[in-house]
Structure formats: structure tokens, C-alpha cells
Length: 168
Image (cartoon, rainbow, N blue to C red):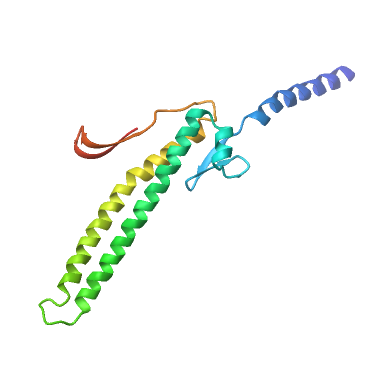
């Protein structure tokens, strides 16, 4: 009985000791709403990220965070142009004037503003998606998988034509 109890205690001690060596130095990260969080739910700031991440992962974190914020800002600007253009068109149709149709300058400015807002909203999608992808890869780099291929954003000639492209 003493031998069995000693073997069980020894096995539990070995399992606990082997698990403890990994628990202190290894943290898993996850991305939620454009930020990285530790497994305890603590958001990373720039100094904590620099301490926890490897140099490559930190570079991906910093670039991904910048692209994510840029995508949100460009999208919000496009939305503001779209709403302003809609308001301008409504104002142009409700104005009473001598010209036909009344408020024609407001209507033209409104359509131009809506087009600008739509273009900005479309351009924000690659920025946002690339930022999210890089944040995910920075979070995965703390695990055994390591860094994956970094997506590249390019403007110009693409295999399917001319435009904005992302290579994963």
C-alpha cells in the first residue's frame, strides 16, 4: 500500500512540476475587436506586447494594429461622406428655387459625395482585413506554429487586371 501511495504521489508531483515549467513562461494570446488579449483577458498595450512577443511578431502586431485603425478611420470617413451626400441630395430636392430642378448644385454635390464615400468604404476593406490578419498571426506566433506568411497589399497591375490587391 505504501509503495502504491508513493508511486501515485510521485506521479502527481512529476506532472505538476512538468506543467509548472510551461505555465509561467508561455502565454497564449487571442484577438478580439482589433486588440490582442492574454489568456487572462488583459489587453496588450505597446510595451507589454514588446515584452511578450518576438521581434517578428511585435512588428506584425504594430503593423496590424496600424492597418486596423486606418481601415476603421477610412471607413468612418467614407460613411460620413455618404451621409453628407444623402443629406445634400435631400436638401437639394426640398429647396424651392427658380431654376429647374431646384437645388441642382446641392444634388450634384450630394452625388459626388456619395461616390467619394463609396470609394473610401471599398478602399477600407483591404486595410481592415490585412490588419486583422496580421493581428491574428501575431497572436498565433506565441504558440508552437510560428509566424505564417505576411500578407502584402499592392496597388497597380494584378494577375486579374489593374487595381488594389492582397496576397496572403
